Image (cartoon, rainbow, N blue to C red):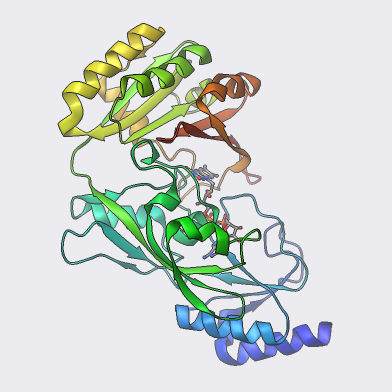
Length: 348
Ligand SMILES: Cc1cc2nc3c(=O)[nH]c(=O)nc-3n(C[C@H](O)[C@H](O)[C@H](O)COP(=O)(O)OP(=O)(O)OC[C@H]3O[C@@H](n4cnc5c(N)ncnc54)[C@H](O)[C@@H]3O)c2cc1C
């Protein structure tokens, strides 16, 4: 087996040169452990040729992004594909509602580019300063903007993927999960067109609550009253404390400025009927401005101890059962809620 692996690596090295990095001699405690090597392609065509090459030696390929999702070390004999050299972004000339990106582009980079033109992504993850386009597409999920626009897959115009063996396909968002990942066909995402929205004047809002029953009641109240938010997220008491936002648990969100009068008034009604209070605008801007916490380019990535999707009715039970944990939540228009329990990174 070792001889075949060596032959495969030699063949890849002949084409990719020093863009093939052999496995480090010692364990690094990362996804690289157990992999034969990492390869850094510069184009979709190179991913196709890599997939064809490894198939001749029956060596599987595993794509990696920023590793913000918990990684199981690669099984012995795999080759990792990393997209540090495929971070391109392309935007349409006109006001068309999409943006294109290569798999290594960061969600926040893409959104920042769009903001310069008064547009933004319809959805992005709260790990956007680090997470890659390919990584979140492979996982799917709920993110900032899902209250109005739903799950990520509902916001993918099309994705360009390379199948094991090298076939290249263009798939729609809803088809992605059937081709990507270990439960799908093992495809690698090499590019995507993502939905965008006009985003010139979003207004942040934030509400504070003494307990999780009140907070969960307010989330239900927001649905019942049909408040037209773009985003609705929550912050556990422990996470609020760590962020220096006080001792209460929080709901926060944002909506386009033109909805301010109606949305603002309805939120005040929801707060007063559930025992909460609306925070002043300066505090709302602060909570919103730190929505990526604790992800930051300068900080080690926190460990994602749990990533669970629950219905609205289970929010307070989940938060109470993890009273000492830093938990952030994101609410989707379907009533599904993504809850993420975070722990400090191993580096501290
Ligand atoms: C603080 C924090 C906040 C988060 N917020 C959110 C959130 O708002 N919503 C949410 O849904 N999740 C969230 N997550 C989970 C995770 O960050 C996201 O799923 C993220 O987008 C993964 O991207 P990544 O680049 O880190 O991918 P990785 O963690 O490197 O990879 C994730 C999976 O995708 C596969 N993969 C990577 N690139 C490709 C590719 N090009 N083609 C095929 N497969 C590929 C990998 O093999 C792996 O199985 C969060 C995590 C943390 C730590």
